[in-house]
Image (cartoon, rainbow, N blue to C red):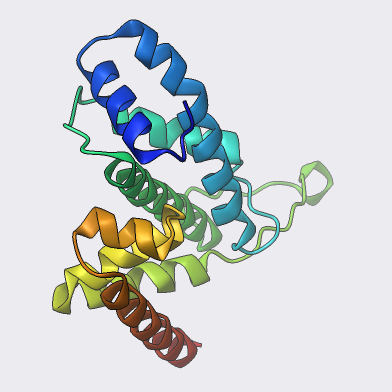
Length: 190
């Protein structure tokens, strides 16, 4: 069974959700490897020096996806779309924590001789992206879902179209629009 074959993946996902332990045992390594690939791709786009590792991101995303029992996945696209949203939320939470620390939250005075000096890159870019996506979501939630599927979940345009039940042309057009819109918003924020 290949994680890339949507029919086999959907069948195995449903069987695992229905309690088939063998299907779950076969599915987990494939899902894990695909999530690690997505996590590495997302982390590679961030500022160098991130302290969050792909393994941590995958583990936290997987826990969020499975902690409430069977959410009724209706296929590969739905599962990885939810995984993309979970990864986005985790990255934003991580960036917010780092940003609050950067601004003095929880700091205490330390003698310079005892200090462990590290340099952390700013988390502002990811926070600005999240803020822009929240603004866009108020006007057009589907466009943000396309970003979640394409950027955070790593789905192709065709997979995103299939997941959302819209045409490939619509996804491609809206993806171009969102990229241009985000470029403008993020350029203005600097």
